[in-house]
Every structure is written in structure tokens, then in C-alpha cells.
Length: 135
Ligand SMILES: Nc1ncnc2c1ncn2[C@@H]1O[C@H](COP(=O)(O)OP(=O)(O)O)[C@@H](O)[C@H]1O
Ligand SMILES: [Mg+2]
Picture 1 (cartoon, rainbow, N blue to C red):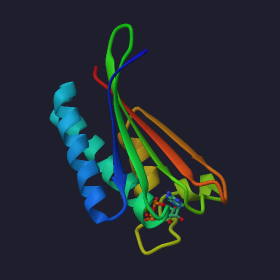
Picture 2 (picture 1 turned 120 degrees about the vertical axis):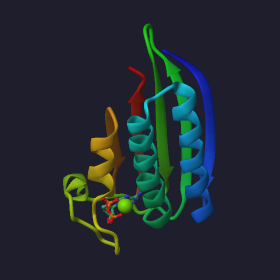
Picture 3 (picture 1 turned 45 degrees about the horizontal axis):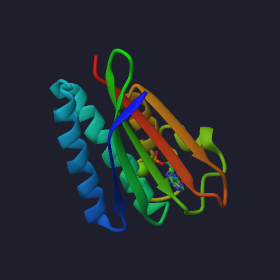
Picture 4 (picture 1 turned 90 degrees about the vertical axis):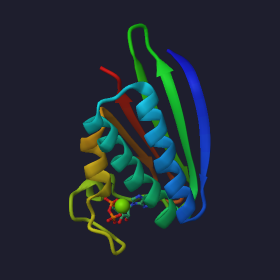
């Protein structure tokens, strides 16, 4: 595994969410994903970046293009030092929200990418890693 590109975006306000989405759009094109996969990836980024801002109180989005032996992927890591999540399964359940969203962000994002990791503990912040492979 070789990291070909690495960039971090600060998410401190809505503009950071927009920037993360634009950055994702640029990289999925660069990676050569089809239109459907581009849209899926950008939608997932939009959801998770917004969670980082709203629930995490802001944080970072790191975008990496990673080269495997045979193929490339886009790895997107969202990190915040907010309150964290007590019950991960519950948070991933469609319709569950502690805010005023629709509770579809985490579960939706998970379905839109190839690999989804959610690491969080109360008081320790939250880290979400999304991976999308170029087939
Ligand atoms: N970064 C985060 N920090 C703390 N809690 C989070 C974070 N992301 C998600 N959550 C929790 O998971 C719940 C579900 O998130 P999500 O599926 O995106 O739905 P919604 O954003 O509509 O609430 C949120 O309501 C919140 O309680
Ligand atoms: Mg959400």
C-alpha cells in the first residue's frame, strides 16, 4: 500500500463541509470512478462531514489516494474530538437521530462506499473511515 496523495481539510463551519464535498468530487474524477460511484462517494462525504461539524463540533477530513498492488482507492478519514457515540449500533440504525436530521447519514454512507469504519467512544471523539475502490 502506497499513499499517492494526502490532504486534510478543516471542518469548522458549513464552508468546510462544502470544501470536503468539492474535494471529494475532484478526487473521484481523478480516480476515474463512474458517474454513479462519484455521486455515491460525494453523498457519503457530505453526510459524514456534516456529522463531524454538527455532532463532533468540527474536526478534519483527510483524503488519500492509496495504491494497492493492482488498484487504487480513495480513503477518506473524518475525525473530531467531540462527545463521541455511546451506542454505535444504534447510531447506525436508519431513523435514529439525537439531532434534527433524518437519521440516515451513517447507515446511508455505509451503504454508499466499499468499506466503512466507525470508531467512537463517549468522551473520546469520533473517527469514520470511508473507502472507495476503483474497479
Ligand atoms: N461525529 C459524531 N459525533 C457524535 N455523535 C455522532 C457523530 N456522528 C453521528 N453521531 C450520532 O449518530 C446519530 C446518527 O447520525 P446520522 O445517521 O448521520 O443521522 P442524523 O445526522 O440525521 O442525526 C446522530 O444523531 C448522533 O447522535
Ligand atoms: Mg447525519
